[in-house]
Length: 622
Image (tube, rainbow, N blue to C red; front, top):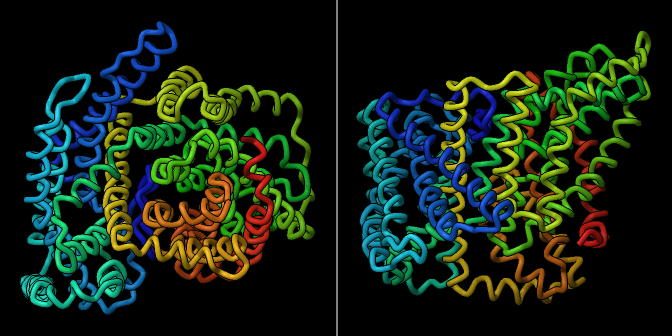
């Protein structure tokens, strides 16, 4: 999932990435191994599901084999993302700089990444040695077989970064960048005794200041978090850096997260087989003849397609080309189409299988089944808000020459779309009903989509399927690297006692839980603009969820507010990165679309206010 916009390089599985580099020939063996790991994980998990539910004979080694493969997939996939320039990063400020300065800042960002990776090699190797004394329960092998992936991945990423640096950077820029990064490190080291006495000011210096500077310089977000945490631990505490490697391992190794690459692959299959387009065509045949009907079709398609792909970019790239031409013929302005597309994608992000919900459940310890059940309802509330606005704005829609689709055509479209339509409901029912875990359902959904795609939708060639596996590995690696470094940063924040003091401050806000909810909405909207969903959630969930629980707020209710606020921020200009993705997919200037999106954002905010003030909307399904 890869797309580049004016503000950000976003990894997504289905779009073209203008900023991405083609994979290097020297990485072909790594890509093959990563693709094989994706396939192996799916096969092993399917074997586990079959043995457990069909033969009532669970294989105890399945989880360990999948866990070992998963961490290797994460690190090799992260290296592939480095090679292809597919790591998530903010480029808004770099793009504003003069060309000569931009070249230097990009070199400085790469040098900072290389410095971080070089600093992590020794702790990663030490961590692997320490883990060699731990033996796995089922396979009876040293745990170093698993965690060695971290050291191998760090070395590989470091070599790829240096290779690209020496291949593209000016020698003068490289030398100056090296002096700046080295000088900053030396200055922090010399000031170490002073820094250790500054207390919470070190959070401002390292976990906010260093991270913010790295973001502005275009350092990939995973490495922004990594650099801030590394500097914080190394220069202001006595905690060994090996502890950071352990926290990264913990962030990337949760078995719940195994479903992430599998749902990513499911999104690829959805696009390749045309299953998403079949859903769009069916809804268009049903609703296209009514006033605002095409708006309803667009919103409904995003709702249903999101339930299969779990990818906002995949959703928008599937829906926009199928609907925009007819909507323009009916008098819709391109800027209004972009506004509806982007806010509709934000609305649909709580529809299962949402990768954001899976990650949130993992890091905050919230029931995935509960999140999936509530997600449908919450998306429905936002859907009604947007549909109401769309109906009002469609009063001047040109309906001449619009005819009701014949029942025969509707029936044919329903027959074609039927197998795709049932998939999101199968996923929701299986997870929400406790029949299977999100990971188990993801593997079944991939198998189902492959079979249906081959039988009914034209199938997928082996070459394309292999490329999909490699893209899945690259995106999964980029996501999991963010999770690892963000969890390490969240752990560092917690260890300072900041979380305890923050909880005490929040608990005494005037207005109680309502004030806390308002602060939550503002914070996650801002972070959603800058960091996108996953980094913001992993960074703040360990801090905010315990406070919410102490204030009596239900975890599922709070999760829905957090995810919705974050997605609204994601689509809010001038920084919201999702807005620029929608503009790029619809080929509309952001300047033109910016004025049109505000009424739709207000509709989402009204929906968010209702969700926040009425906990029963999130909890009645539990």
